[in-house]
Length: 285
Image (cartoon, rainbow, N blue to C red; front, side, top):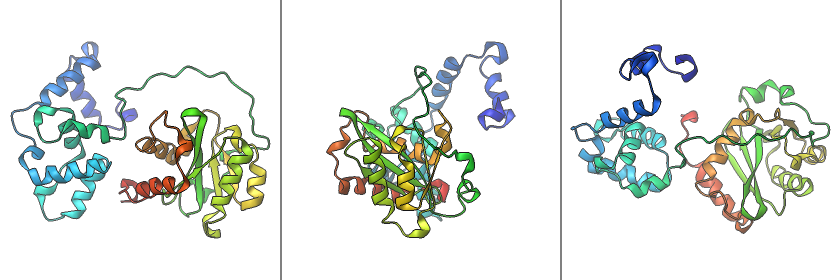
């Protein structure tokens, strides 16, 4: 269990021991007791440090994540321990309002609103709609290890009224581009992608990894226009383009599900992309 959770075995052992043992452990009851233990008499750091709490609230209002805020504070105030707070403390202070340091309204700024995962209904297997698709397994090693820039991941982000935009993420730098679309047919999508890709310097145009959606059925024409080879993920394997999947999740802060994406102009999408591109990234230090 510890290996699969990425934790120390002693952490799992202690969790079991304080919550009924191997045979008596119940996750819901253990979770409730953990929250109760968090309501300790000591005032939390954000309640004791109003200046720090004000900075954290301001960054939450700018839609920074608690982890980004904690990392930024460490860099911004390297010699001042009073201006440090962990991301876990920020989350706890938001969720446990009795701590009295951050307003509940700031919860709406967190990028993940769901507290649990819901199973999705299984989809029927369908024939591959992409003729001549080249598997991700044939992608160059330099793209796999993110050693050089110029290798991209892409997908469509869906909105209300059958609207879509294209999202592109560069694997080396995590740089994001958003592309307005008038439809999701392959001619429209590949044409819009090609126009944006062609604006990039040649050294930033090496490969594109895409899901197996039929919108890239005309990938051969796209490659001829851009000299960018397209590789396709295995069916039902979105983790093979993890940077793009993560970015699409972050974009829901700006473009909630059900939003009519056709109402957004290209300059508006560029502004959203710039907001993402100027956020701190833990993976980039």
